[in-house]
Length: 160
Image (cartoon, rainbow, N blue to C red; front, top):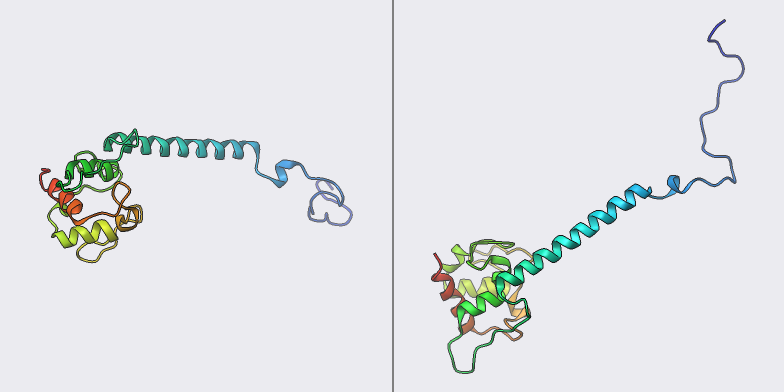
């Protein structure tokens, strides 16, 4: 009888014998998986750093300069925008990491203030979590004033 087998049926494979050690490849991630993970991690860190630096360059704050208005003067909306908004929304407010700001320029002062300070549009929609809530974050290291918010909105209204 060719091809026939005699004896008891083979037991299913139950793994290595008791007391023997399995190879590291059987218990942990393979060297290739760890290398791939580390490569992705390094790439993500490099992209994040590059995006942050690009935002600083767009905002003109690469040196960490703080733009403040002298007491008793009208705030410079363009300078406030460059120091606080351009890093995400682009130097020309046309969008970058954040959306273009053509619609917010046309909002009422109260609606614009609500969006900037509390992250809610005039119609009640919550803005992205990455949008700073400037009531807590502040503008240039201090609590925003209505004059500063009006100046930023006025600056946006000058944009095409």
